[in-house]
Figure: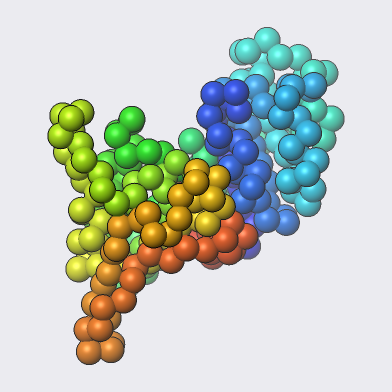
Length: 102
Length: 145
């Protein structure tokens, strides 16, 4: 009974990422989209949160949103996997529900 | 893949809907819009609950006086939800604590339990973050505002 959590806001502007991480359960997946991809930049002030809160969860980033913001794939935190729009759809289909943190 | 049922709507389908409120009441339109959608959902006889976390807990704080900002105080509307069989308002304890708020700072919101001779019972349940996460994981549909 896993959940896909999407985050579409920068953690520097809103608490959506932190709140999503706080409510993850083992087996859930987190996908950063739109401005949310800013949170996946290696070395940022929030990068350590993924290790603490999302130990048993998969982390994904939507590649077209990274590219649009000039963030290279090599600059994304190591544990995050990149997906395209098709991969986004697959993630939605693979989980029982989606929670969109705004 | 394909774990999820195909979306189906028919008269006999009752799903668990949770409306997740994370924003203060007057800075944006989210809180008021969420309440509108909650009231609409009541007409479809679904199993509806509300969650209040992060700044969303401020939606339930008592003593809201909005005349000075020229906006309608919609907080009394939460008290009407019981009449629509919406009786589960979950408030996250950690979110209250982080903001220096206590359960006593929240409005009294009650419903009449028709199974117990219409006894008045509180709709607000203050629960922990992990309890709320667990309840979220039991929902069919989560709508965040």
